[in-house]
Image (cartoon, rainbow, N blue to C red; front, side, top):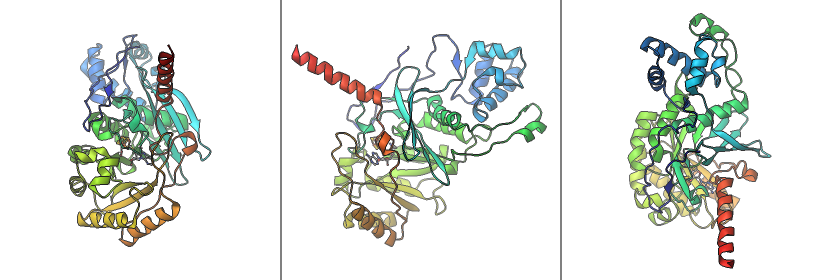
Length: 412
Ligand code: SAH
Ligand code: SF4
C-alpha cells in the first residue's frame, strides 16, 4: 500500500501543508472519483481517445459518476458496449473504504472510513424529522488543538483529497439508497423524463467532521463544487455549511469561490479565554475574525452566519459572557445566529458541560439581545459521533498500542 506524506501536529497554529495528488494505484488504473469533468476529459485524451470522443465520454461518465452514483462502467448504458471494457481497463470509480458502520440509539449513523493509503477518518449522518444532515470530514485529524475537541488531540494529519471528501457524500447516498432511479439515456434529452430523484433523506451537508476545512481549502472547494454542480450531486449551496475555527485569511475566498453558508467556532468572547480554548485565536484574534465575518461575501439577514459556542462549565458560560457576545455581534452589525453546543465529553477531556440551567440562562440573554440562540441537542453521543468526539478507533488503538509498547520497554 503506498503511503503519502502526513503532517505532524507541531503545536503551532499554521500547519505545514501537505499537497497530495491522486493516490497511485498498484494496478495502474486511475480513480475518477473527485475529478472534475475537464480533468476526466484530459485523462480520456491521454489514454487515447480523440478530443471529440473524450469530450462526449467525459460528459457521460461525469453524469453517471456524480448524478447517478454508478461505480461500474458496465452500467453506463448510453456508452457503447465496446467502449466500456476500455474504460474499465484504464479507470475505476472508487469510494472511501468502510471499516465500520455504527448506528446510535437516536438514529445517528457513524462510519469509520479509510483512505487507500490507510488513514482513518469518520463521517456522521444525523436524521431529523424535516432533514438529514451529513457531517463531512476535511482532514485526517486536525492540526489545530482546541482544548475541548477530541479530534484536536489526534497525532497525525493529512488533507483529504477532493475524492475522499465528495466520496463521503456519495457513500452516504449509497448507504441510504438515494441515487436517482429510472432509465436514463442522456444522449437523447427527451429520455430525461424517465429520470426521477425522489425521497431525499440526505438534504444538508455540514463541513463539521474532522479537520479544519479552510486549511484544506482547494480540496474542500473542488469537492463541494461537485456536490453543488447541477449535473453532479446537485445539492444547493444553501444547504451546505462550512464551519471554521477562524482561519481569517481564507474566509473571503470561501465566500467567493464556494459560496456556502458559514459557521464560525467562536466559543469565547475574551482574548484570554479564546486564546486558551481555540489557540488559533493567538494568530487571528476576535476582532479580526468578526470583521472577516462582517465582510463575508453573501452573508445577509436571509443567510445569517452561525456562531458556534460550546458550553464549558465555569469557563465561558457566565451572564457576562452572554452579554459580551451580544455586544460584539451588534458592534460588527452581523447577521448572526448563535448555536449553543453542550460540551460533549471524551475520555481524558478536562472540561465539564455547563448545567442545563446555565445554558438556558445564557441562551435567554442572547435571545433578549435580539439574536436567536438555540441549544443544539447532542446526537449520537453513545457511539462517539457527537460534535468534537470524532477520533478514529485506529488512532485510539495506536495510542493503546504505543502505551503497551512503552510499558513493555519499561519492563525490559
Ligand atoms: N474545525 C472546524 C469544524 C469541525 S468541528 C471548526 O472548529 O469549526 C465542528 C464544531 O464542533 C466546532 O464548532 C467545534 O468547536 C465543535 N466541537 C469540538 N469539540 C467539541 C466538543 N467536545 N463538544 C462540543 N462541541 C465541540
Ligand atoms: Fe480542529 Fe475544529 Fe477540533 Fe479545533 S474544534 S481542533 S479546529 S476540528
